[in-house]
Image 1: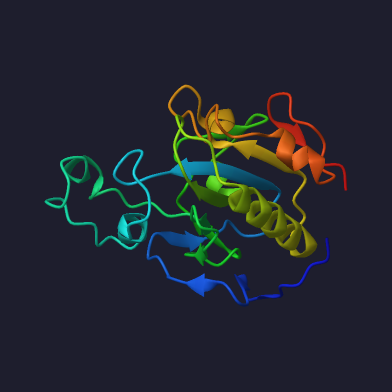
Image 2: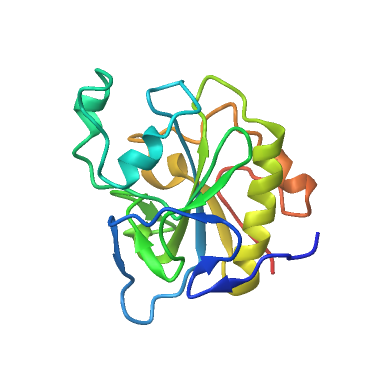
Length: 192
């Protein structure tokens, strides 16, 4: 698959931008070496609203749903969101640190936000992801790897267990292997 997107100042050309304030600078000299795959739905197990965008931009109305009262004050973001219909949204420049991983560790290195790019799929633990989401995720991973020295992929559960379970049991890691990436046993490294 060819790379048909370009990245300018950490933003992928042609993807809708919804800038999130929930980001900051990466530590000086810190290279991006990890992609973290997440799943998110707001309200839980419901899809298609703009509530994820509202959460990532600090505009989620706590009165709109009982669950939102618990999460509306969180200051979180991710670099990317892939919706169920394949729409892609970028919230944070890949050159900056998005607040997606929380308390986390990868291969003994804490603070995964410092060296990772967070890719959210609209989904949950109980419902399979859409074909177009896998297609867009693979395309996005290939694009990011063309610009950044990414050597590993992990799920949020791999870096923040047992606190997190996403992308969950309905995410088919083998789909990434079909596209020329190595199979996943737990979390794994990409051979460049």
